[in-house]
Image (cartoon, rainbow, N blue to C red; front, side, top):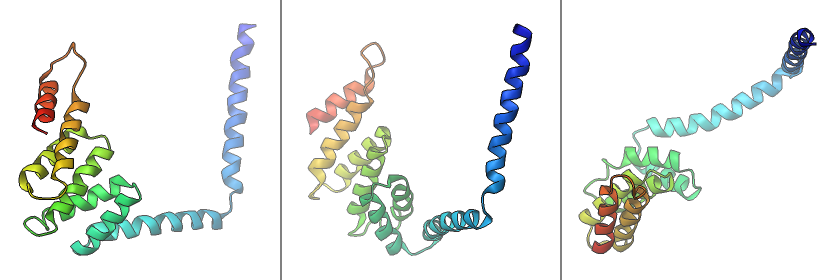
Length: 163
């Protein structure tokens, strides 16, 4: 009985593999081209924008991606624009969006640092209170269970008290 199981399993796997490969044979070439073109057009627009030197277009697209909750694309564009707008009137907005992109992606270490930097660099901005709170919240998210090192927890407590 055991000797028959192996050949039967082998036969079933060969049949399943051949059925799977036949589906690809019958797929039309126009469908493949249409899928490939659609995918390459979308990627190409973003990549062209990412490689361009037009900071204004990058900033506008980054905000649009942020509003669409496409944080990975927005983050890459904000990273490119952040040094360009440093020292300008748009710097607080870029830093604000950049910090929230990191927060929404779950990177609380970088987001906490960015929120803290925002609070230090732009103390008169209208978003400084929110950023101080969000920085403290990021440190709270990073605090480990009580049995581990509590330095992040202490930082979270200090940040919340400072807020």
